[in-house]
Length: 361
Ligand SMILES: Nc1ncnc2c1ncn2[C@@H]1O[C@H](COP(=O)(O)OP(=O)(O)OP(=O)(O)O)[C@@H](O)[C@H]1O
Ligand code: SF4
Ligand SMILES: [Mg+2]
Image 1 (cartoon, rainbow, N blue to C red):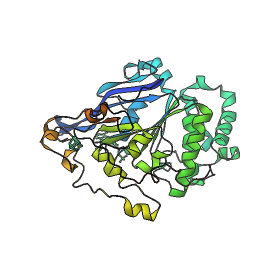
Image 2 (cartoon, rainbow, N blue to C red; image 1 turned 90 degrees about the vertical axis):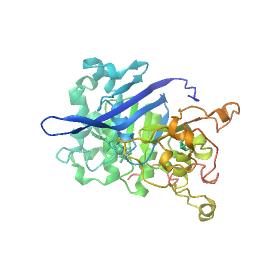
Image 3 (cartoon, rainbow, N blue to C red; image 1 turned 135 degrees about the vertical axis):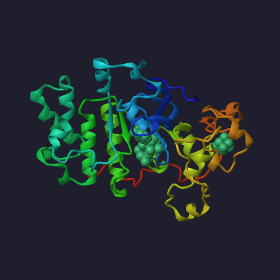
Image 4 (tube, protein in one colour; image 1 turned 60 degrees about the vertical axis):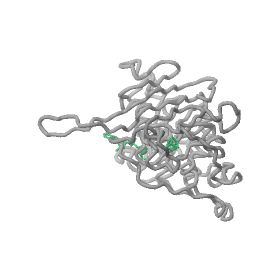
């Protein structure tokens, strides 16, 4: 890895999740596997935000579920403060789970419509009663409502009485209830109107400072994670293909897939949009049951050569950049990695989506 992380809170290595593909009704026979996650490595530093970006189906949610232990990995390890949590069970696992919480994508389906907001936000205390004495819980929930920018008087209302942005605030409050150290946010703004996305991102940004949180922030669009991420990992078909600091990925991408994704991000300035090169990828993403040999991106890569079909590129600083320190020298899984500036520098500079302070969605 190119990054020297001072204080890692999560260390993920060789993470794999294969779902068996079976045939037959009475006698089930395994005929293959859906390779949803197929060898993911990354480190999350304390207080850091790591953005994970990739197209639909590339395995982002499966990674998220493994991080919060909603799914058991097929292989690999997830170390939380040095301890492999994939091997824990019982009380030890429960204690760790408290510290790693998830915020879900869809605020419309992730909140139980029959529960009041107070019960939703306070639900984690039922599972972890040691986190707050019974008599304190209502007060804690009111505080949490206030912290996420909602009126504490709304405690007895139901989810349908709130807008999408407000519901996501409720989801965030629930994620904060146990005072976790890590929040895995799986596309927390993707289901929201563009005007509301920035407000929720700004809220998450503020909470990170107030509560010393580390974030894994998942999105399918590079433009969404730019404002909030310190580092960004780009996923393709179950693997991270490029990872680096914000500036390295947006201004000095070296993997063709990242370059293609960047060429599709919205550029507000019409003149800059004209100058920007669009890279249109050919073909569809292959099925995760049938991953191409060698480089998994090769069936859509305009630079693919014979070597790409036989040799798996490792995620490391490419040889050409190893002796040249600079922003291009970051991990990229490509045999022919090359710097290519796709988005004009002034556009890649990383404005907040609408530049506003945290409003009340
Ligand atoms: N329980 C399961 N059984 C079989 N296949 C699964 C299961 N869960 C996910 N998959 C498959 O694994 C792959 C990765 O799914 P995942 O939901 O992690 O992708 P994603 O990157 O989060 O996509 P999206 O952007 O659409 O949310 C997909 O092909 C999906 O169909
Ligand atoms: S290894 Fe080959 S196919 Fe893969 S991204 Fe690089 S050039 Fe393209
Ligand atoms: Mg998903």
